[in-house]
Length: 368
Image 1 (tube, rainbow, N blue to C red):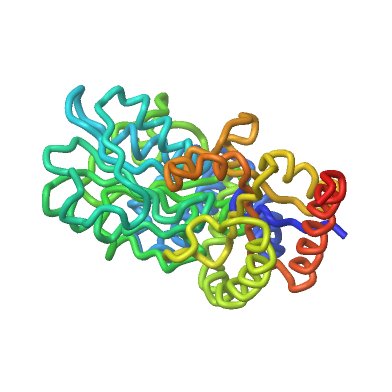
Image 2: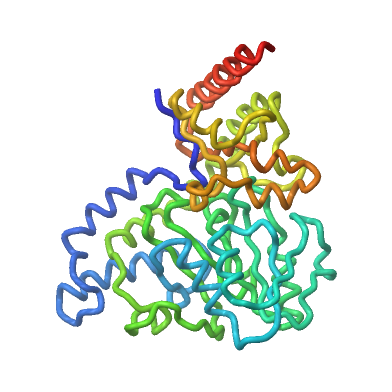
């Protein structure tokens, strides 16, 4: 029996989403920018998806820019908001690589604040900043950052704010209108939609410089022909966000059962602070996270060591290094198990048994 516990990397595409994509294929093969009938049919698919996503996030369709995924949405939000060659960027040390690398590419002074909750809103060093960047939900630990407080402070000081909500949508209620950020990044693959589709919501009146050049698509904010079939799936997944939110209490029960077993083997990252229901991240002393992930995979349990975008790099987690600087071993020894609405009680029990089998072999071979 195979068990998939890597929903923070990509949530399995839901049957309803696959059905929507299949229904869109016969009428969505043309270039949606073309003026003829086939192009208009494809364009309708794109615009229906835009309307569905806008409803899911409390925004207006005209303010939604489609991208090729969450990474491009983050890149466009960070790089597109930056103005001029001066100033500094205020962010956290917990950001996803898609944000952290984009911030680095700006070439500006970077000020990174402490881990979640470590800085009071009034003490955020935002005065005179050119840009602020903060994630809503951490991809590795599920920690919920105080984005509302960041947004209030940024509005007071007139600082543009980028929010990475890729891991928040479907796990927490997202209302971009009430949040008050400048731009918000989203990803299809985190909510049961297909990969290859993302979006950036842009607040009315906010200027974002395009990063993909060559055409006037997306109201001139992102050049290139979109994939209408993938966007049909994104729209269908967005239409099911309320169902995903309704499932979170049950997901939390299963996560807590899994976490109780895992916590016997090491500390849980983010424990004691606000977290979403979908993930547990545990460091097992004496193991590298990559080796533990591989051992569990042999047992049929699919997990991860951290961000999927960094899986090809055998390096300690930058997130956990920032959160636990006095326990550096945790950054190398962590395993992330992330759940979704489709995760069952049986999946959790199989995962627990697999972990016990793997760690049991380690204890035996070590003479414990």
